[in-house]
Image 1 (cartoon, one colour):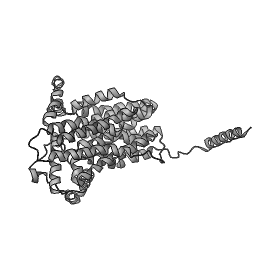
Image 2: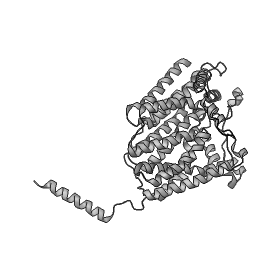
Image 3: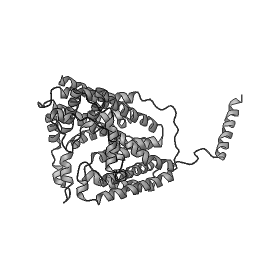
Image 4: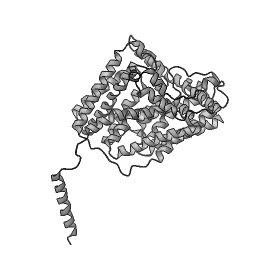
Length: 435
């Protein structure tokens, strides 16, 4: 049974990856990107877990069914999303956009600097709370400014936009090279690649993209070793980083599995056994955690806003997910609606494809949103589906007002331009009527 389900999942991964070869630029669409993550991150762990004799009976089978359904939804949601028939688009002033990008970059840079000045004991924990979370809430604006600046440079070649882009890239350097942050690395490259695709119709060659995915699969599964050597107080040990056994770590994963999918199998089995669901309450709780400041309303009032959610995995199997690992989005999707939770991935794929069509039709707002969201959409697979929902709230608070201020006050053509166009139309009409 497990072998058959693994074959089905492998075929689904192949279908999703095939989407990137059908037409130019499809490598940036969600089906291909999700196929890359499922193939490089999920599939090796599942192959290894097939050899785990200590998993609860039927746990891996249930997880595989859920994962196969979710992978199918990553294709189906995109397939049914049709291009928008009519849209109302804001027309932007490039000079105002540059100002907005600069302000967002400066505000975000200040709060990233403030985070770096916090005591180590406040930032060394995997799960931040208190002041670091508040600072990070505002530091995120740097990413918005960076995306706008890169998009403007790709469109016009503005030197000011280039300077702003370089300024924003400097703040990515520490998080990518020293911190080994997967999200920031993917976000950085996706912003640049998508800006060139949307504005200059330049696409990364597919062979290079596939080669990059192969390298990424090796790196992502050795990220723990990398971080332990790059984040040392005395500085990164580059020689030891170069000698990390990336291939050996990947092989070990295919032989013994990984913590992420192992936790997912335990959680899915526990929920399947108890049939206790949260019906989406987990999303409300995460929004309260992220956007309700306890410093302003008090910890007791914030705690009262949380909804009760079942967590039967420890009661059923005495299992606790390892600290620092994720439990994947398959777990929370199953925990909310049983196997029907795969529809969460349908909604992610549908929203991403709708944004894609709008971006390709020339909508600058859709382009900016699409540049920012792919990594969070993929984290709905590797981490939790909440990671796709939360950014929308943050962008509604900070990015949308900034774009509103950057729009042209009167996008309609001037009276003189309208008269000229009308005269041209009348002249062409008379010419066409002449025998």
